[in-house]
Image 1 (cartoon, helix red, strand yellow):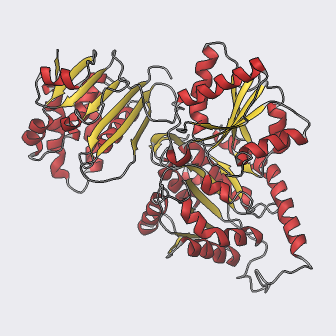
Image 2: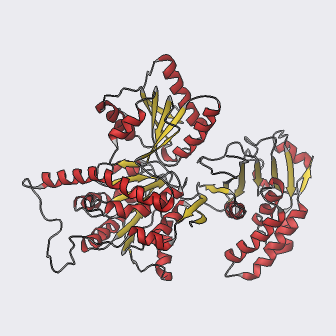
Image 3: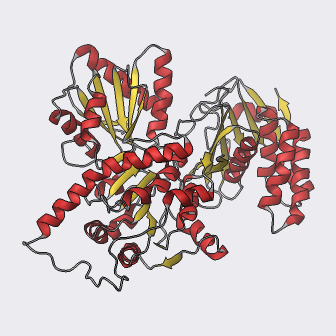
Length: 393
Length: 193
């Protein structure tokens, strides 16, 4: 029987970490993820976990400590947001290229500047090509569930890549909501013991980690990383299926909400998907065939599957909570349209950059997007595909 | 979202409006509801206007935005009435609950012709009588439960004993005063107009 609780997204992440009981947690506080290491450090003090907690002096050191621990053969976790992730950037690439399955809880917040503590996805988008698996979470429940699944995916021998679980800063990290927790012993059994094949503290197999890698081999190593990322797709599905057996909660690459018979649909990630579901229900009552495709797995990007899931629609809007400032649309938009193009699917698709710096996204805003899509279906006219939602012009 | 009730809290930093919204979420959760309790974070400083929110429903809540058309508004500090548009979007089928000793004429004037129900309570008096200090959030919590009927008074009081025992584990001497504050508020709140 699951445990009925009410927790904030940060509490949920910290509880997942407690149940996982990793060997090492290294973290530096930054709003809005501060509470995660804060709660976790109290679990360490109370003896609820036997984790080595490393209170480092910066995020660069937090990731460095995780890399050291993971390379030594330990299971390591961290949490951060925004500029904390920016400061980790150098080590983020090193973690993935050394194939170290570190797990991070990333509480999404706008990257400076100017200084802003509120939610958008610019932090996660900044590392979208760094070789980390990225899972996004609509609410506290998904932030928790994704963390429980994270090590199984990251540590799989065909993957061996670091993984970050994203959730929206303040919107879910600081909102108390209902949640179903899994019993400690079930999580422990599900996550299992970390048994790395190669690790520094194995005296039977002396090895070097991260030496010079020039023209002769770097390309091959990058090719292997790319293959590992492709392999992650299969593993994400396997682990999610096993998780569903334990909890009844179903996860895939994405969630299709009333998409099957929809004519118009929104593609988005994290908490906005919840507000979109609410709006879809409202529009359905009026007979408007609206649907939602909520991306859970952004890296690797499930190209064929997304293209197929959207192929029957008459118009699609992709919502990006980070502006790529490139004159060509947000990151999610580019991935969705290139997925469709490669699969020879041509559904009229527009991009909306929205919610920047914590600008609240209301159900009315989402309804406006669906109205715009209806208009595109009616007139066949897209005009400007690069749009903004909720900005003052 | 069957029977969804949306509540917006207006207070000043340090008065406990955020805590009150979380306590209300807790109490409603304990009666089997689906809940959300969240503050709107701004510059956090003592005395600055702050907003906090609750959604309470019999079915899962998916919407994740602030509340623009609340069923109930709670005003923890009546000095906000002239600087914040507290009735913005407030449903006329709902109600506003204000911690104040101001008269009906003044309130009607500052509430911009709001036609729904107006309730007042002197939370300062309740708090001073029961706690000996001014903590307006405990009386306001009881007031909103009474007006919104999100749970019965009995359910609420029974649940709050548990919450206070947990919250004040290190200073149990204040539990009795807080319970008295809740009970007195349930009696003191009155409708005007």
